[in-house]
Amino acid sequence: MAIHPRPVLPNKNTLYLARSGGGKSQAMKQNPQLPKSGGRVILWDKSHDHKAHHYDNKKAFTKAIKLGLKSGKGFRIAFSGGVDIADFEWFCSVVWVSLDGNRLTYVIAEELSEVCASVGKASPFAARLLNQGRKYGMIFHGTSQKPQEISKTYYDQCPFKWIGPQIGANIKKFAKEIGGKDDDIKALDDLEFLVWDGRQAVKKALKYKK
Ligand SMILES: Nc1ncnc2c1ncn2[C@@H]1O[C@H](COP(=O)(O)OP(=O)(O)O)[C@@H](O)[C@H]1O
Ligand SMILES: [Mg+2]
Image 1 (cartoon, rainbow, N blue to C red):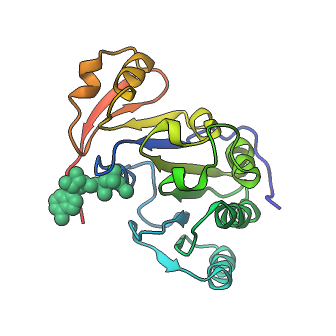
Image 2 (image 1 turned 90 degrees about the horizontal axis):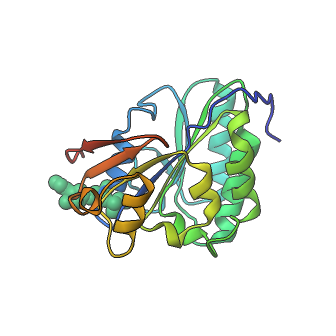
């Protein structure tokens, strides 16, 4: 059970949307909103894109989370053994019981399309995290190549969007959404983003970092 609700906490959830190779994982690594050290970070990271202690085994992962929470210190613990929605639901349930409104907990989830059955509501525990995690100190950062391949729960509950290189109809979609021109989106190269905060978009060009 998540504890110590603090309804005053802001929604800082962030979604990274770009074609494969567009730089989503790099953007997550370089976003200053995510703690470099000292924060509590739990990751769904099958491809080992991020620096963390990775576990393929559920028991070992849960044990590491428990020890991390008990330590009172920061940690970066990743589950890399997940293959389907059922595994992601289990992961989200572990995150949910780890939340404490008195401490921030960052959740990083790579390639959300693999754990979404439709563009409708997210699976139950994932929806609970996105809809209610904020007041228990959760800050969610997730990636997807296309908005059409993920549940709308993620899209709606992430006020911050890093919009990278797009293909097809999504060029127009994002241009319209940010009140810009198609060319603003078309011009984006790999590792280039328009960072949208719900009101304005700021261009960011990243350099690849190991
Ligand atoms: N060793 C490297 N040196 C320079 N650039 C790299 C290297 N590896 C990957 N990149 C660049 O980083 C980008 C991939 O970023 P990444 O965040 O992994 O993309 P995504 O997560 O969107 O698939 C590509 O544009 C690629 O050109
Ligand atoms: Mg990636």
